[in-house]
Length: 312
Image (cartoon, rainbow, N blue to C red; front, top):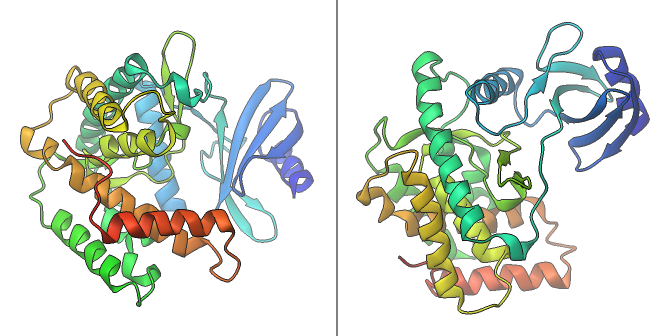
């Protein structure tokens, strides 16, 4: 597959690629004489959805936000078709600056800068939607990953009931141009690169969606609590410190109402349900490892017993 991708990229793009390495099942690191690039090759989204996503991220880039710019093909296409075993859609990105920070380095300064960048992201997103009304990118609840009752087993009736309640409660919230619009949708810490000058680059906008803006704040708080606490103190205090740093940074760039901030635990609960449902969606229940069983049971206990991962 990598050799075929290499051959096709050299046919379609104005670079001299000599090495292609698979990073995930849809992302490839591509080395050329002209530098390093990343190719996303997938059919998870339609051509129109990906074209609208790329229009959005290029708008963010041109407005000075830290995102990876896309590279047009020789035909001038930002979303190109590659004939692999089946026709696939490809987007080529210039390599983003920065690195994935070690867990111990997600300190208040970095998290405040992350909040500031999310604030800028949402402010620019509103301007993008004023100029380019969204036609193809879904509202969050129309995406398959939120179809919790399809994937959470019927016998898990308590969790199914709670999941349905979280979704229906959020869907019933009043929307406005100030609280709802186009967001990244998956800003966990692995989708953020940081350089030596604390400049941040957001990557992987494939899950961008229309949602309440506060969800883009809930995801990194959830991510930090789940993956980046390394035991130096009290995790409750750590959660509050994360919250204060991100929100302080956000409010330097954008407004957020007290009413929406008070609903942050609800959106963190949505993220928790989302992660649990994905386990059922993608893991083979007949071949679960001991670690996968441990993780699922951890989630089940937390959800069934109404133990919140975060409290204001």
